[in-house]
Amino acid sequence: MDKKRAFQKKKRGELLAAKSKFEVLKNFTTLSYIINILLLLFLVSILNFLPPQLPFLYGMPYGEDQLISGSYIISGPLAGILITSLNLVLARLTREGLIKRVLEASSFVISFLILVTVVKIVLLIGFF
Image 1 (cartoon, helix red, strand yellow):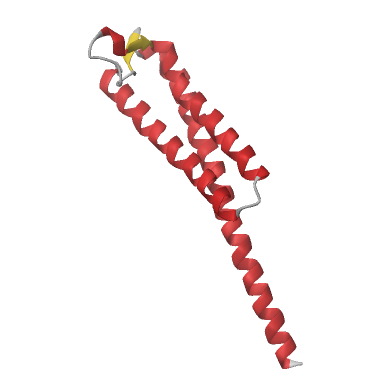
Image 2 (image 1 turned 120 degrees about the horizontal axis):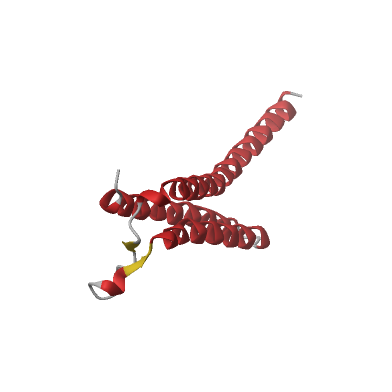
């Protein structure tokens, strides 16, 4: 009997460890959505305080080619929501655990980089 109970406890421990790993990955996706939605709400609320044109396209040559209309700054968080949703769908369709982890973690990294980029632009240009 003791061996059977020890085996059951070991199996329960492994099951709980697997559940906690899934919860962490689920939290990455949730955190990505939260970052993007809060950033989107923040940008909509301060849109009136931003100048009519913002530097956003840093890959373009220096000057007016880098500028976009002020209202297009919300394209960053919208792209983050789109990428997170696409990665979530792909993670649900695949059976490989590693690919799921990579997709969900990359959603978080992309959302964080969008957050840093947009906040730096707003702090550089905004009239507060």
